[in-house]
Image (cartoon, rainbow, N blue to C red; front, side, top):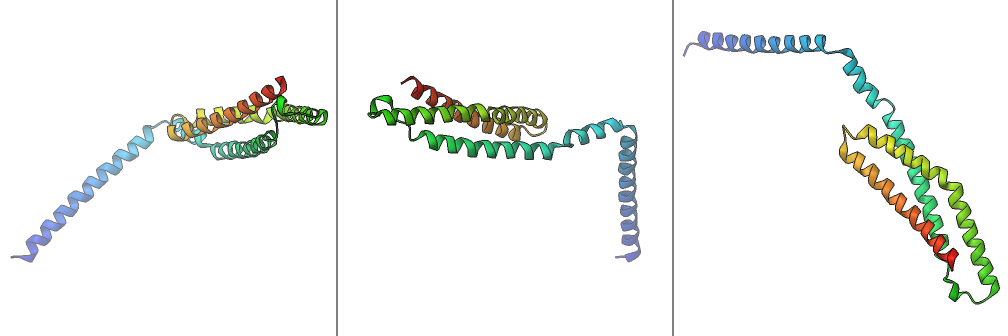
Length: 160
């Protein structure tokens, strides 16, 4: 076996590899030159502010969930009208219902804000990350159901 021949073969194979790499690199450079710069800026603008939007949405979501938890806990003490025997019990229940209703009205802006942020976040995530968009929808649906349940419980106890 002649070492010179195998060395020449190796050099030839290496030259072919380098030529192939050079051709691929040339194609990449041509592609980058003809690619509209707006396309790159467009992708960057899609990501611009996304982290802040996620953080805002999460903050409003967590705050509203904690607020809902407190209101749900407060309403646990409500009784149906036929279980209220003393006028003081009726008066206390009416005060609790009035406070709960006022709290709902006061916090409605946060609920609307969460809805707006969530819709904006879903719109931004929809194309690139459908699973994350669905998670935002699911979280908003959960808060909406809890909100609606509070409203229903207040209305139910107010009628009786």
